[in-house]
Length: 428
Image 1 (tube, rainbow, N blue to C red):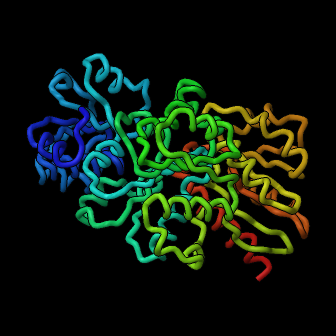
Image 2 (image 1 turned 135 degrees about the vertical axis):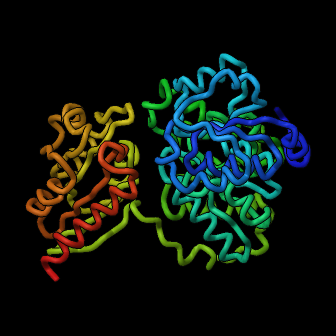
Image 3 (image 1 turned 60 degrees about the vertical axis):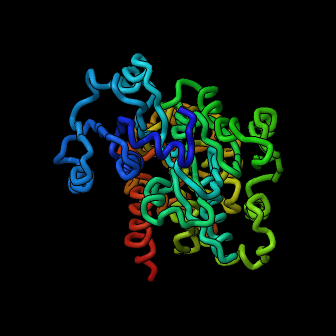
């Protein structure tokens, strides 16, 4: 399975393809495959009632829906399977496909094979969403049509169907889950920001996580660009794993983001349209060091997107006043002891909530005063009691949200409501 472009489009018309999982990427993949002429079978563990209206269009297109169950004997008849990133490698569905010798790919591989325009792919443990959106912002300010897509929201497959391949470039955020199931994925520009342990509830170990991320650059050719962070040891190592033309940037500051943008614009051959004003006007996405308000001299910051210790450490480096840190949620197989030194230096109190609270407390014991609360509401109230003028209250959980929320966005919105309704309102 090495075809791309028109050759792949022709091949799809005679192929039988399965889609595992009907979340955002699975739905988009099923639509794109069917639009391209493939026979499509779509599987999801949820039944039709729980999946709701999103199934109507798939039905009308002739997709064979297999709901509430996994694949049966028919699995051996598929040419390949598009597997949603939320399905882990130890899943019985994945294991059954491998036993039958069926190729598993991610939606990003499928979309890349059909995409006619340049792709800039961005990965890293932390900061990849902001960098992806910033790159799209800069290119659009230059008068180009750049579409941010991938792990941050809408899949590339959905955009290919919607705009008929009319973008000048696609700026794609890619995760380790997605990259782990790529085979020939080869963006024109690959941007690697950093690496620290993460997602060890999905990957069997830290090496597997790093190896998945490295697939970003493994297929590059000399005419492609690998843009790597010289301040990160893993990124430095990637320079030995790629045939792509390596360019460097340093750090994770706003200045580093701008340098990445300059390099990407040059790699795409668009540098004649560059103006310094193109970097202006960018607004950071919500839930990423989002400053909510100052009440009673206390600054409240929503960093709900931080779902691993490394990201929370990065957040703390940017806080200049004494911090009351709200942490907790569902652990992703990570250790929190790596945070002890910085917490002792920058944090006056840690308020824990959620499923992993006791585990975090054991890892951090002795570094800083710690209290445990049943939920985020109670932790916020305690932060209000403790905070003095000049302090910062920082929600940077270092954990996934799925113990109590559908997403980190829902957790962040809840925190924002608590601050607006119960904290800020008191002084207005």
